[in-house]
Length: 509
Image (cartoon, rainbow, N blue to C red; front, side, top):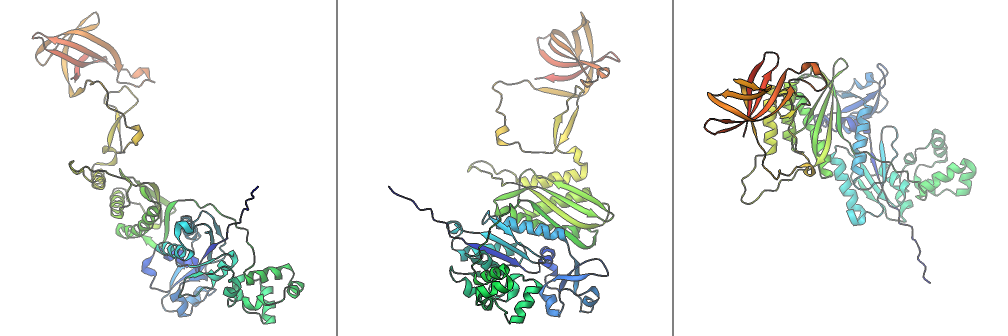
């Protein structure tokens, strides 16, 4: 009898750490500020303090906690207000990016830093060795405009500590299994998020690094600090287990930006929209998707908003197409006040595929047709461009206009097996003379010819709605008539009941 032993899979984690996350979230869509010293303030004036800053501001001597008055003493720093909405949106974008490498993601962010752990056990066959996965992950995050440090280890807490204090020249660290204590020995105690009491105690003992903490005897440490001392020692030695609590990131294509000053010029707005579109297209392409529609929501000065939606005939990732369509739409429907913030939301859709034959003529590009229709809409109005759809009424020539859309492949109807008669509408209807026989048309004159009615179908009351009986003002007759020379005529005759007038409305072919 054979027995099979279930082996526990080897644990492997990748932790990403982003310093000064409030500043990075605000600057990722503002490339013009990357070369300038920038600080992020939080709090109510005049008690604002620096909560985050970039490297150039730190080199000037600005430090977190400084007041607005102290910041103004430095030469030309760019002062930004903290935006929780921007940070939340950026975190969602990053979690979505991490989800492409592993579905198990845990968020451990605190204060002004982003810390995220990814369970990458068993991903070698998909992404290669851990070094290759970390490199690919770093490139993806950089393309989103965020700078991070990545550490890979079989112990979750070891990876988190290494990511916090990794060398700036090497943003990727891969720790070998069994070498956790050696990799952590030179790190300062600040990576453990100690309380003030614990930090003061270790300072009095002369303990400054994780290696010094790991060398303390466990029994004596527990007798002085309790079970918390045992936990800190296990963290310092890379032996602390971790209960992974994964989250479920939601895939949402949305970008938002709060402007530093109100914007009134359309060109300035489109410059900002272009940067946001780059990110939306990049994220859609990462999932082999395209943008099916884009909704632009503008927060206006005075607590108002202005929203416009653009939907081309085919999903696309062509940035210039979306810029042109949004430009034409905003020219036709401009906002009524200065713009304070911009939100760009896109609905993902499958990428369009066109199969061309060797001998068939090349079809016109769908993107050019979308731009042409947008230009026509700007001239004649949106309600006058599209396809005609019949209304649910008996009123003659009652229809509405809808935008052009492509039906799904499974809803395409096959051609009818038998030919159908077509109707040619006469505009305007032509007056005619009709002779009745037993209250039905028996003979009429049309275009200087006399016709004898052979078949008469009707009457059908028209010029009204089925739910309102007081609006029936006309009746319709479908006639089959023959002229004196034997010519056959199939037609639609209308009778105005109010004025007792007959008109030829249409001819059947």
